Length: 229
Image (cartoon, rainbow, N blue to C red; front, top):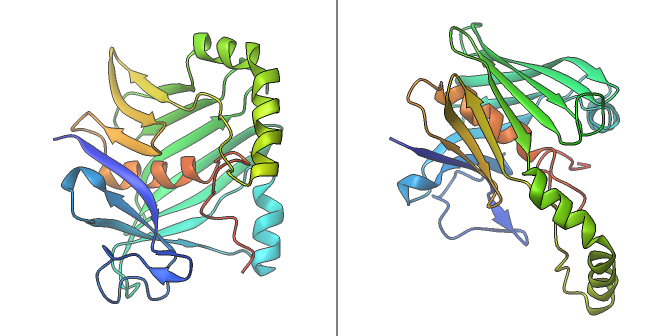
């Protein structure tokens, strides 16, 4: 069955969202939910794993692509669903390992930023243990050409939005389709959802992918892990 995973903030304007069950928001700001279920089923509770130096050190490291966070299976932090750590970051290339709650390696993500040496689009590679490697490129080439061709118009709209306070600025193409062995096991949609199409994709790895992709939201978006407190 297809799953649709999304990072969701547990509160808005300081108040818990009405669909959030009582007690879920305590100690957490974001969770991964499966929107295909239709009633706020929490897949994982997200929490940054801070290095020595705390939040300032984390924010400084994330500028180079580093990420480290825990996906908890329960709000009491009794069981880790998965842990994401950075093994390499810099020069536009970042490599992450995802570990299961019992210390088993679930897989590896590699992000190669656009224009970092392998193409004009950001490349995400998902390598799950014992499964074919899946590669996805951010946006379709055609829509990127269209977007850049209309860039002067986007600038005018952006300036107008600043004065009007609407914040409605067109964003670049964001859809990602991962392909592996003739199939498309994963897909990232502009609605900020990761869709899992293949039954062999580990749900823990998919949840971690959802969280790390959303942490690279553009300056027009809202990365969940860039909070200063």
